Image (cartoon, rainbow, N blue to C red; front, side):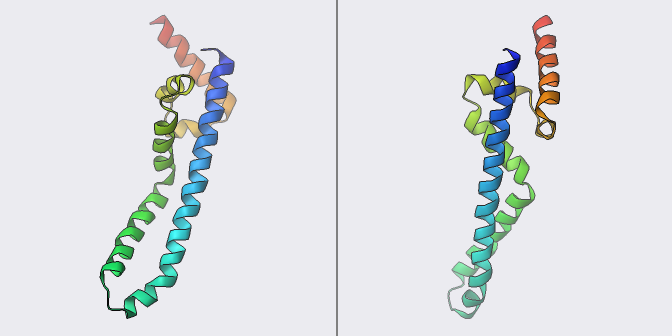
Length: 119
């Protein structure tokens, strides 16, 4: 792959990851906000199934928020893993690599491509 193709794939992966993080963060926040305002009404009502449903799902949403970067990286790999230009880059990436800027990541990835082609 050329450096320009790798750089475009890196930018696409980072943009998709950012979009997933914003979308899931807002959705999780809205769910927890709705649960906050409906919890009192459910405690006073007779139906305990909905109360337990809220408790269990709010704990699940909390874990999603705690591990938001990992969840979003997994979803990004699912979404872009089938694309030829991104799949080769995704195989080399780890979650911590995405904290690097594009040029440093490009340098690291092109070094690994050179090492892979010589071996």
